[in-house]
Structures are given as C-alpha cells and as structure tokens.
Image (cartoon, rainbow, N blue to C red; front, side):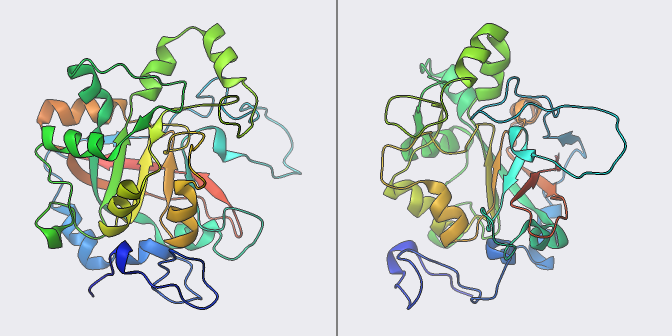
Length: 303
C-alpha cells in the first residue's frame, strides 16, 4: 500500500482538515495497523545481543508529579474500589483521549505495540556539542536537531521510499535528557518546578522541553509513518505550544498514533551508545481497560 504524504491529504466530508484516518471510520487501532506479522518478524531481526532493558519508571517517579497530578500512593486495603491514574509516570496516550469509550485503550491492549524502534538521543548529542538545554522551559527540539542527531548516529531520517532508513511501522523514541536532569536537581527545585500552575499561558505555568510544533516536524512524523512515538519528556512535545495547535492533536486524533511519555531512556541510551547501534526491538502491552483513556506503557526494549 502506498501511503499518502501529508501534503497530499485531502479533507473528507465530516473529517477535520489534516485527518489521515486511512483505515476506515470504524477503525480503533490507528497507526498500529502498520504493525503486521510481517513487520514484527522483520523487527525481530533487530535483536543482536539479547539485552533486555525495561523503560518503565517506578510509580513514584517523577516526584513530585508534573501538571498538578496526584502523587502515587501505595496502601494495602480491602479492594472495594478501583481507581488508578497512570499519567504521573511512564504512560501511553491513546486515541480516545477523553470521555468516549470508543477508541479506548482496550483496542491497543488487545493488539499490543510491537516493532522495530529507533532512538534519537538528543540529550547525548547536546552534551557532546556543548548545547545549553533548558529542561524546565518550553525548549524546542527542532526538526533540524532531530536530523542532526540522526546523522550523528548514522541514521538517515527520511522515509525508506525516499532513500532513508525509516520504514513504515517503525517506533520513534527521543531521549531529551529530561529525566537525567530532573533526578540531578534537589527535591526543593523539583517541588517548585513541578508545582507551577497547570495552565496553558504563554509564559506561566508548567513548561517543559519537547519536540517543536512545526510543519517540518509534522511532515516528518506523518510521512515516515511511525506506528508510535515516545520520549522521556513530560509531554513528548514542547509544553506549552507557541502555535495554535499541539502535536497531540495531530498524532492522536488525526493520525491515530500512540504517544509515550516519561519513558525511562537512560539505560537504553547508554547501551545504544556503547554498542553504537540505535535500532532495536520494542514491545509494549498497555493495560486492558474498556474505555480507558491512557495506560502505563509496560514497555521493554530488546537489543
């Protein structure tokens, strides 16, 4: 199947501009449809050393949580209630990121998220090139940054059909270095930073590093046909956006692409750098909750 480029998308009746829901109106998998038995078998070939690296944070990390979320509590009690907020830690945002049961997490849980993954280690690249990074501001990892990081890792960040190294169904991971920085500062600083107001103002509230909102980034994320994206940052994208849109709107609502947040990429980044190999096998099994709007990612990288 030849997938359309973003510039070639045409608005359909009843769909918002920029929508690329190409598997039909009743589909609940979105870009996970790209993950087929054939792509999974090919992804297994990425396993070389057999090293297994979990990418899940402890439930009580980050501490305190960002965005005014409730902190994790562990109490042994009689089970007569079921309540769980997964978004303070390693999590996957899903298509139905609201109150509708349609496109709930159960669709992805029943399918699984499995495939070939690529790590772009911006944090390591920035350190090597003496780039000053502001982790607690809406510092933007730009399209050019991503291309340059990829080049430094001998990866051509273009779709395979254009002569690049990115295959449909690949999973994109971006390590910003946020978690390393957040662990290095004092608890007093973390309380102050993560306790900022949860608002969407241009200069106040919670502000964090992430991928920039730009046409070049949208083209990259769309045209490479990643089946999922993730990062170690609080929101994957720079927060808040300086534009009139968020990448979440495109990735989740318009394209059906899962977003992983707070993935612990420290051990993975070190192992990839040691082996000078940035492509590996990845498996994630979201929790199976009918109508769930998100889940802990429950993710493993296998090198």
